[in-house]
Length: 278
Image (cartoon, one colour):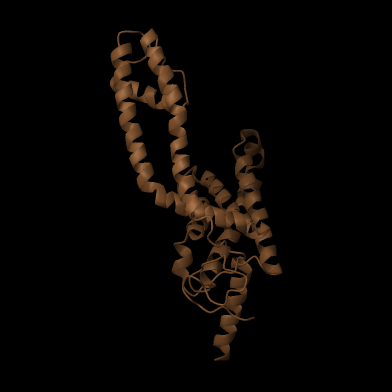
């Protein structure tokens, strides 16, 4: 029984340090983690510079392996310290942590994959936990929900844009096909319509006739209005949920790994697990 309690206390201490940023030890761990991530990304960037890589290849490789091993240990501790490992393994951060660890191991079998270590930059999202930017965390959560609710409207809108580009591309092909302006086929003309409508304007294809230039001008003006539509759809959905409560701390549940509960929370708002009074 005492062994079980000791094991539980040991696991809880690791959980508090790794998953929470409200304690001094948790903040220190996250700060160190972010510094190591930045160093790791810097090493990958330096390795891409040929002159540096040729001279310091061994040092860079050893440094990357040390950091990879540290991340591997951290990943295992994150799995061990939660009561339901699957909740972490298949969570957003769990997948990112795994993807940021395996590229160096893959480089032993597949050349060039070590550059994927740069994906560790996504782990810098944990800076929100350290700086206590909970207001922005809440806003990002609301933004994500707004995007999900906006999907049907945005899908209909994009379908309309695709049809419009096909029509405009076909019209431009009919107008410009006899000119040496690059409109050699309908698919290529549709490509031009997409580039023009989105106001990207590569300039590799350009209309030469007066009618073609007039149509192009209309498409450019239309593009500005079209770009604003998705923003309006998402903003409308965000306005509907702006009054929802925003979490105030980073307390993480040991069962479901849900974070950002209210300061006075006694139970997890997702699974109902009771938090320890300690």
